[in-house]
Image (cartoon, rainbow, N blue to C red; front, side):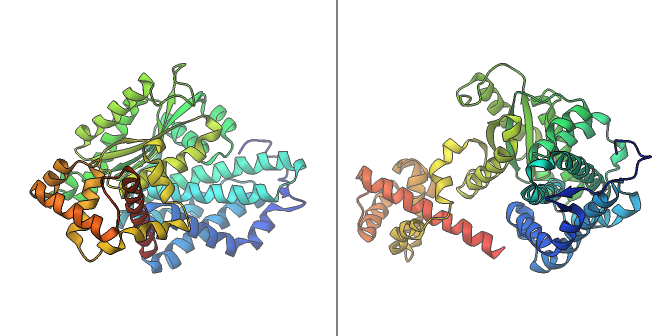
Length: 427
């Protein structure tokens, strides 16, 4: 910690009360809120059994909050022995093959929620107290990340100073906590803008092979992925990656593109090509959602990119680069709406005839191309024509009418969006 260590530590007061005491009194509801947030926003945690969430995850979240509160009381760094529980929890997640990036994201989400809670208690004259709190929260985040890495079998002491610096800046930017100070501390200048990339990576042949150790194959893939993204980012990329992907911030060092006009820029086309090349290097399909953000807007951009990536995958994208603009309708249909079930009900008459429903879906996904639909379904083109006529008869909609085609397309999107909600609730 910085400052004169000979002086006694002054308890941090926010909103007229001891911050440590306020957090301690709010421990139970804050732990519940943190677990709910992680379960909702971190893909792999949605796949954990309820028992794991109620016991293991809740216990380690509580332990982390208690450690942060102890830092607020003493102002001291966490002793290594106090971090043993975090390392052990990470070791268990590693045994369950939870991607490292997902675990680190859970910690970053927790820190972000705690900072948000503290900020809501603050009053205008609490600027100095908030700055001190931000420094302690960043120190806690760095210590917990090191403990997680140790639990995953990575000796964080072997990480280079540059690796640690880039990781720290990624944490600060993606959570919005103390960004300028961390940038100064690690000696990395903030970029004008960042490419914000949320990435999903499928399993490759090595990971699926019974002759190769899955954990080894995953680690190899992550190393290849990190190396390639470093090249894309000219060794300045910031991110947290696991075998299934992660999030990356790539500094935009050129004067172009502009923040609001980047989709048609040569730089974006180059980025798309380089992201597409990842598939060849790691031997697995990749889907990337891309946005551009200034440093202050990175937290929101990372969240949105992850949401767009999730929508893209649910709507059948298996590779390539997508933007929100590419999936605006599908993205909007995944937002809560009273109209969603009404739209989805348009296709309910087809539920009793799966062949007709499958043909209609393929027809829409292929851009209303009957020949492409026939090829995809391995049927005669006349079969496609017959099934589409039957779909028109059952739904009462004319598939040769542009207006009705729009309605059918929206109905299919609504149906898939409801399917996404059902999948989430079941996990």
